[in-house]
Length: 426
Ligand code: GUN
Ligand code: ZN
Image (tube, rainbow, N blue to C red; front, side):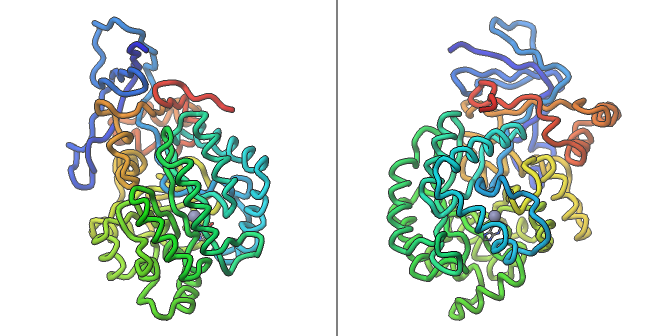
């Protein structure tokens, strides 16, 4: 496979702009991204001395593929279900929907449509919940493998406080997860996450077995929910009276660490922040979900000040959009409601290189440095009449990105590339 170039405006990050400021990013107004054998081999200003094919995307903006650090593929068909907070929303809508994934044909159908939706939105990597059924994870990984995607997923562990047809047992959950790890973890671009749903639906025995898996397979991920909603937190305190706080329930079973991703963390005490930081654990900020379920306002600055890695997540189906652009726009508003600012480039960082760092994947994705996997998005700044007239009035790339945060969605995604090839809908 020879070299291929892509000519466009190009923006990517080398570091966190909330720390490194303007040294954190590179922007080439007339840039060239060069790809060979699925990897980035160069990025810079366009020059005229080029002896390979160049795809002309002048007028468009190329950025790294979006990274969604928390999403549920089985909830694709129930996005936007009306009117409840977390616990009744789970009972009323989520559990009945997830029960359908006992049928692997259904799982396969939803997995394909889910991946189409991610790619339409420019999301190239995600950390994904399956259901309790191991076949839900097989279906997802098969579909992702066929498209050569870098994805992390896992089977839900849930052995109490849920309908019987959605429960495993501590032993069964352990054995099924182990089998899935052996079948999928590290195969092509796929990685496994041990996935206890959240503390209320797992017994102590099950959380301990999850911890055992992490000991046995130290490079798999751990993915769960944490401190999303007040009623949930009160319930956890009742179920685990011996624990100091919600996070402590997980820590007691050895579930914290650099590949542990906790969705939400909206209501965290200082002690929990200190433990997250000390163990290098990660929090996924899911603004559309937190607003939709009325969960609360994520304290981004407090979390960042503790040095905790943060990614952005859509949390579909409690989240209301697959679009990371829309998610970025809502993250801005969540900061506004707390009297804090959030620069456009900070949110774009969280959705790209910051997400890669949150998932410990920044050695292979997240920006355009040499040797990275060539997953990228071509954005059309004139995708709608309003976007066209509004972006034409922007005087800097920062202004343009902020307008995209606020106004853009899947319509602005002109093309999504995976390993240097344009992704097609299946
Ligand atoms: N907590 C436990 N399960 C879920 C879920 O499916 N979605 C959200 N948002 N929170 C949860
Ligand atoms: Zn979730």
